[in-house]
Length: 363
Image 1 (spheres, rainbow, N blue to C red):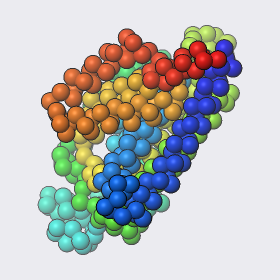
Image 2: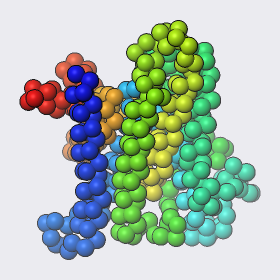
Image 3: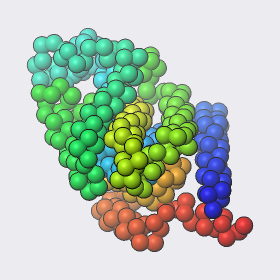
Image 4: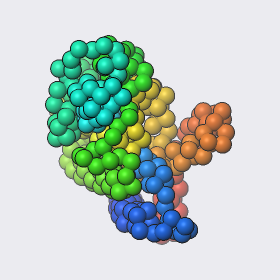
C-alpha cells in the first residue's frame, strides 16, 4: 500500500513538472513568435493571467506544506503573500522616480500627496533589487517565526491556532489601511513602470515574469517535496498524526512546527512578489481573511498532502473565479461556499484522490 502511495506521488509530481516545463516552452513561443491573427497565438493578457495562476499555485503549495503535512490549518497565509507583495511593490515604487505624477525624484506620489517631507527609514534600501528580494523572504519569514514561536511554545493548536492566524491577517489589513503607516493606505502601491530596467508594459517582460513564475513554482514544489521526503518530513508527519506521542518519545515538536511554518511563509512571500508586477498593484485588500479562507478551498479541492494537487486546485478555482466574476459576479461567493461543502463531503482527498482511486483500481 505504501509503495502504491509513493508511486502515485512520484508519477503525479513528474506529470506536474512536465506540464510546467511545457508551459514554459509553449506559452512564450505562442505569444512572441506566433502571429497575432493565428489561432495558436496566446495574447499577452492570457500570459499575465496564467502567471497570476502560477503565483496562486505556489501559495497553495506553501499552505499544503503546513496544513497537509504538519496539520497546521493556517487561515492567515494571505498575510505572508501580501507582505512579499508589498516588499516587491516598494522596490517598483522606488524605480519610478521623476516619472511619477508629481515628479519627485525620491518620494512616491502618495507620500507627496500626503505632504511627507522625507522617505521613511523602512523604505531605505528598496531602490536595490537584491535588498528588496531579501525583504520578500525576510518580512514574512520573520513574522511567521515570531508568531509561530509564541504560538507553538504555548501549545496553541487546532481551531484556536486557525483563529489566531486569521486575527493576524485581519490586524495587518487594518494597519495597512492607515495612511500614516507609509504604504499607500487604501490605494496601496501601483502605477509601476519597470523592473530591472525593463518596461512592465512590454510583452517580453510579461513573458519573462511568466517564466519566472514557472521556475519559482517548480523549485518551490521540489523544495517542499524534498522536505516532506526527508527525515524532517517524517517527524513533521508524525507530529501531524500524533503530537502528544511525538512529544512523549522526545521530539521538540514546537521547533519542527516553527521551522515548517516559517519555510511556508517564505514561499508565500515569494509568490506575492511575483504576483505584484504581473497584476500591477498591491493594496491592503490582499490581507482580507476571505482570501486566506479561499486559499484553503484551493488546497482542499486539489488534494491535501500532495503538493501538486494543491497547485491544481489553485488553478481550477481561480479559473472558475475568473469566468464567474466576469459573467455572474454576484454568485461567485455562493459557488465558493458550495465548493468547500461539496469537497468536504464528497471529495475528502480532493481531485487528486479521484485519480489515485482509478489508478489503484486499474492495477
